[in-house]
Amino acid sequence: MPAAGPFHVNLGWLQFAGRIWRDLSPGAPLYFYLHGFAGSGEDCDFLRTENGDFDRNWVSTDWIGHGASSAPAVGEVYGLNWQLEGLRRAALAFPGHPRVLVGYSMGARLALYAALRYPDLFERLILISGTAGIESANIRADRRRRDAGWAQLILSKGLEAFANSWEQQPVIAAQDCMPAATLNFWQQRRRHQSPIGLAHAIQSLSPGLLPVLWDRLAEIHQPTLILSGQRDATYVDYANRLEKTLPNALHLSLPNCGHCLHMERPLEFLINTQVLDQRR
Image 1: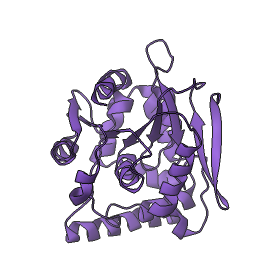
Image 2 (image 1 turned 45 degrees about the horizontal axis):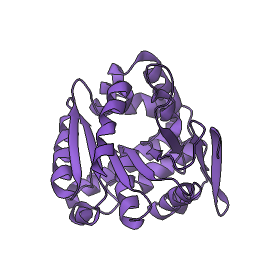
Image 3 (image 1 turned 60 degrees about the vertical axis):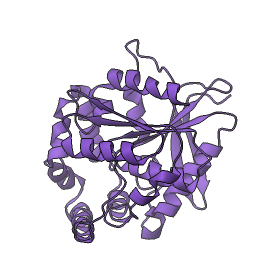
């Protein structure tokens, strides 16, 4: 069976990178982790028990433009089709395992697209601080402009200037309640991504560009756990709406947490995700 370590799948001339976080045993469920913007699958390194071990089989992937995946100067490959195809091929590289899809923020949005496009690929879903899209045309247009502005900042001023501005946003600034080592890792990672990759990804995967999914959520029948942090009021509201709209969903809002609840309180996150095992 596959041993812990990095792997990749080919997307034509691109590489879609991933990592297995512990040696896999036959037939064990796999938890596929989808990171947020400017992140990577290295988040999984913090999802350990008090003993420093992993209590489940995490498999992480890096979106195109992020982490160890390709970050070419070709904007077309950053769109939804290429990203989801990379995820599909990564998932199919591990036959014989039940698959749970775990998405955070941007990764939660893309998890919903994956569940709709590949309805039989994942048996269960965990959505962390997610939404099904922006419905207002005016707000969508404004978001596209803002994301184009972020891309221009990255390319013209560099990742340090981008990160300094990005971290002033309230939803990001609230991450200061993370453990110090985790926060430092996240801040440094933003500053060591591919500028070309992030600039293309933030525009191609902008919520102002991607299709709205609220009216399609009834098609997703997998047991779904929706997690929000009580300090993240906007996403608590999104989570409540997701719970009402998805046919087989449960929403849990964790106290003393913000947008990045799984990194802020990893042990509480791990404990609460066990609820999903009872909803098969």
